[in-house]
Image 1: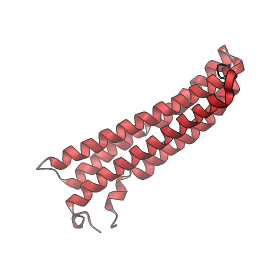
Image 2: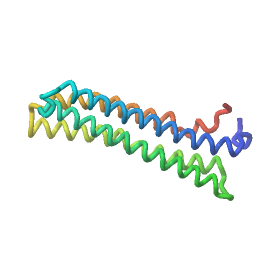
Image 3: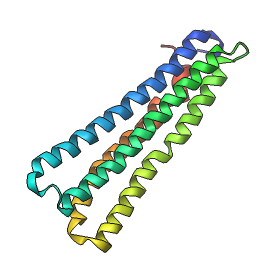
Image 4: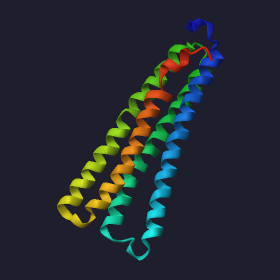
Length: 167
């Protein structure tokens, strides 16, 4: 199906929907990491301030910060699509592709920041507080999964190839 056969309002709606789906995915990751962190604290009881627990919670916070940043970036992309749709001289397909591209380009950094933050956390606990190292490792494994979800959001949900589909 050619680009000209897709109505303009469908292109705008898809741009808004793709960004909204990215917001939902990031919010889900944020909720999951928050739930896991809260559960770890509750299960630890009086040991909640021990180095392994705090290290794991710090790792989860790094992942949650990246997921929150992803939700904000996707929300701003959605606002950009809505603003571009109200411009009278806008070309829908070009505008939405450009906005999706910028949002996806920003999303490319989020998994990298999450993983780099966890590597820095692991290094810090290895050097300064070795008793918390294994807690940081466990938290890092969870953050790796969150980073994978952020990668999928970028590569699948924010793909401009989805704009050209017939359905």
